[in-house]
Length: 343
Image (cartoon, rainbow, N blue to C red; front, side, top):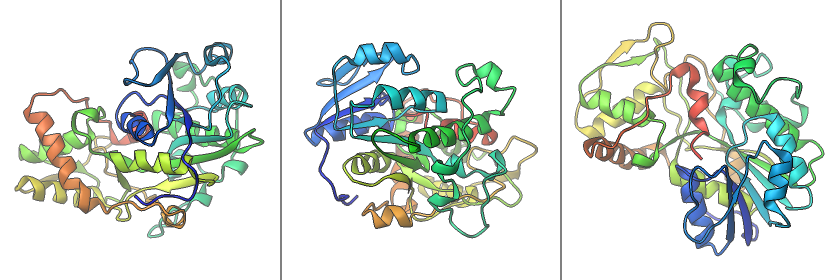
């Protein structure tokens, strides 16, 4: 990926960043010479040479106390899911940083999760489709109580709407320059990919079992796990503000994805029509692949899926052969849940 214009931050706070592509992000930051502070709740230790702050990011007073007098050139927030937590971050990091980058998701464009989102079949979805500055925010909802929130939203809507409203909170009167990187579905990384979604496909296809797909599956966007980490670093080092789509240039539907996997495995993919909600994770019956023109204009370049997917399949296959356990794949109706919970 080419450099985005800007000076690399020398001091960076990463919230989350203790698994999957977040680990690669931390490594890239350290290789760039940055001094990295990792904030999490303490369940996972930081990599060697990384400052560690143990705090619950939802606890405003506790987070502020744990950070003490630390200040940063940039903050990269890997685990921001709700407007309530965004409001905490906006207050706690006021005066602590000049730049705040949030890992967001393509699920903000899912038309099934909001009547305010409108996509046109065949037209890649640009960032202005969901404008954070104009998006309605409701901080009265029980964002910190999943059971209570479930009475308002289903799982996919809860995730997508939480991200949309979190972006909106940061976009309005933020005391720092703000950007969101709206990530496509992340693949690759072998055992680091705890979502189990790519393994779901490689295992089914290798075993000759059918993959459940919609009658007319729609394409979606993907990104390689190291490239999304690099994109976050580049955006943090740039003057870019607002949302940026991050994806490979070639959207694929689930059948095209399976054919690439089958070709790498030297076999033939089999299919069955999905019944109800049992479609496989990347089978969609609605259109929302992302437009990447803004990313290209910022100098970000993402490799075509066909260039990196074979290696990702090989990693997933090696992991399965080695007996490394994988998580149960995320259901198609809840694909949004996994898109960013891999930081």
